Amino acid sequence: RSSCTKAIMKLPNHLFIVFFACNCFSYSVDSINDLLLSNKMTFEQTSVNEVANITQISEGEIFRKNDVIRININTPFKEQYSINESHIEINDLEFKQTRLIEIQSLQNQTLLSILKLGFKTEDIKNQNPNSFSFNIDGQIVVVRYISNKSFSVDYLDNLNILNTIIFR
Image (cartoon, rainbow, N blue to C red; front, side):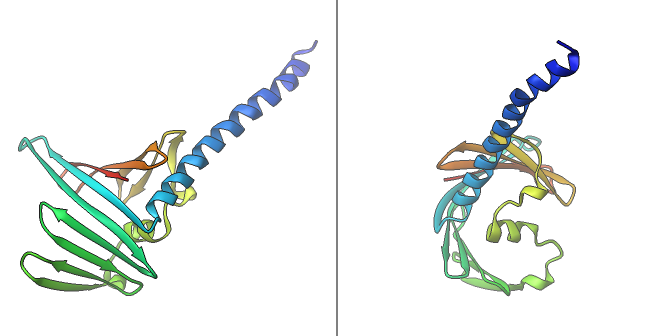
């Protein structure tokens, strides 16, 4: 057989591999979005400052009702964030202080968009069946599929501190 015929015969195998890889990837992104956009989920954020040798853990929940997203931080500080279409209300429950931020005043609304709509496949880079990454303001964010009930998000913040958030 000619090399061209052999290459054509191998084509279905290559297409199957590509199709399978794409299906695994979209299953992971769809599963992560299903979890992220569910009515209730919990999270644990670990911030590791290697320079100061400090690790801080925050825990909380995310609730969705109608068009409002409510984020409760339970530890180490009690805070509540209510996000609707026009503003974010921040309540420091320990100091009994409330602040209102108009969403239009925020320069970057990428994180709000992800919280409201999930991850958009067109923004995703470096995908494989168990993880993908995307860029927010020059910072790389890595999302890892853990199971059908959890995923994690890793990023360096503006102080170069590694943050890992596990969502369940």
